[in-house]
Image 1 (cartoon, rainbow, N blue to C red):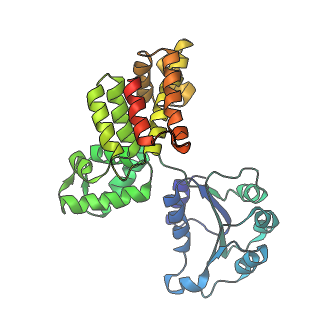
Image 2 (cartoon, helix red, strand yellow):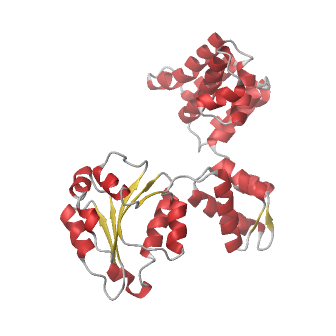
Image 3 (cartoon, rainbow, N blue to C red):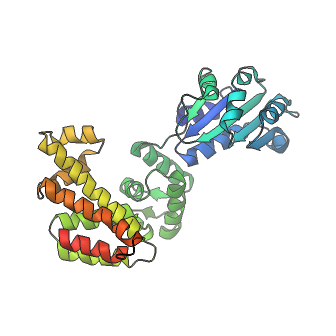
Length: 325
C-alpha cells in the first residue's frame, strides 16, 4: 500500500501488529511513518516498549519481537540497515510474529521485489511504500502545514516553492516556516517572498540561461552564466553536466521530430512533461541534427578536459557556450 493510505489508517486507529516492510524514495515520509508507528505506544512507557536495531543478527530480531510489551498493548521493533542474509533468514518467521509486536523493517529506496522477506511481508499486505508525492499532494501538504502554523500561503507561492525545492518535504516544511517568520504573523506568503528568501536550484538557473541562449539572447545569457560560474556555491563541473543534460534533451526531441513524432507523442515517448518538450522542440528546430551532436560532445568534453589538465571547467564552459550559441 502507499504511505498515505497507511498513515490514514494508522492515525484513524486502524489495527497494528505483525511484520511490516517500509520502503520508498521519500525519506521524510518514511521517517514520519516510522515515528507514527512508535507513537502508537504509551508515551509514558515508550522507551521500554520501543527497540531500534541496526545491522542486527536474525536472533536479535526474533528475541526483540518475542518480548512481551511492558504494561502496554504494543511493542515496536524497528530494524534498519539489515543485509540480505538476515532478510532471507527471517522469511518464514515473519508469518508468526505476535500481534502484540509491530516489527518494522526499514529499507529506503525502491522495493526489492525479488527479495524473499519482502515477498513474504507483501503476501500479508504489510508492505508500505513511501514515494514522492505529486505536485497536487505536495501543495495540499504545504497548505495543511501552513494552516497548522498560522501562515497564510498563496497557492502560487506554494507552486513556486515546489518548482525550486521539488518533492523534498523536509526542505519544503523548513522553508515554509522561514517564510512565515519573514513575512510576519498573519501576513501572506506570496511569490515575491519566495523569490526573495529561497535560492533557486542550479537546474532552474541553468534552464533560465539556456532559455536565453537558445532564443538568441546571447549577451544576457553569457552575462548570467559568468555570474553563476563565479558563485562560490556552484561547481563548474556540475553546471557543465546540467548544460549537457539540457542539450541532450533537445537532441532527443530532435530525433523524435525527425521521425515524424508530434510533440505530444514525443513527451510520451521520452517520459517528459509537455512544456519542456515544447521548449526543446522550439530549440531543436533552430539547429541541425549534426550541430546538436557536436554541441553535446563539446559540453561532455568539459569534464574530460579538466581531468586531463587541458583546461579549467570554468573557462571551458564559457568557451563552449560562446562558440555554440
